[in-house]
Image 1 (spheres, rainbow, N blue to C red):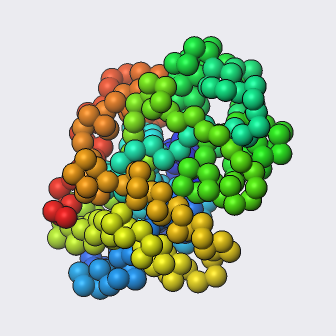
Image 2: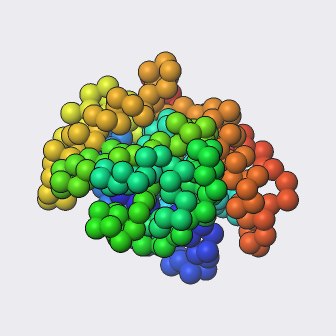
Length: 334
């Protein structure tokens, strides 16, 4: 599964969106998806299916995925909250978006560089020099790939073609050499389809960890509706915590909330089990929290590589205050 990049978000102007005022009822909340339903969204569907939103007196509308970045929808007031990533949040907020990350469902990178398992000529990232990357147009991602290759002793020189969701098939078929996959989705999907892959994880090569998935809120709405914001964030946090503690029950909630969507339901169960085991909980076993060290290390990398731009499209001249990019003030004690 892939999501629109934050760089795309900075290129889509609010004027291009259909004008849409915030709902008059603060208990009515719109949530923007970044892709079709998958296990990155599990906590949201658990909160819906288990009645957590209803218990909090909230009417939550899950907006169907479209071609507009959730960060753009949230920034423009066309959604109160949306799914994102630390990378996308950093790009969008640096460019002036009025968003802030309120919860991190995944505490670590859940992606890795993927190559076909039979590529004996690519035993590690440094062998990717001169190879073809099937990518998604994300400047930050490409800078990260270059750094991982260099950290492994390579030059970081590779060709890049933007293929979107066709990237995976390009690697499977051999028309491209490598891509970046979500281990708990494309990784499992490749196994199920008989296309074995091998993966190089960023942090194994000295690259900073990051929050693979975040949930962003509209800053103005949050300021105006702190009580409703707290109710929503804590209901979603409760949903993701159940997903981490009882992945099979959570996977079934995702399936039940989206009848007919998943042709391979076993993928949903395996994916949620992997996320629960490796990516969702912090050291205390809690889901959702964020800290300045984790946020700063990766976002600082983006800044120092000159890929963050301001609202006018110019590279940032000073490092942002990363503590303003996220908040834990709406979370509850699990």
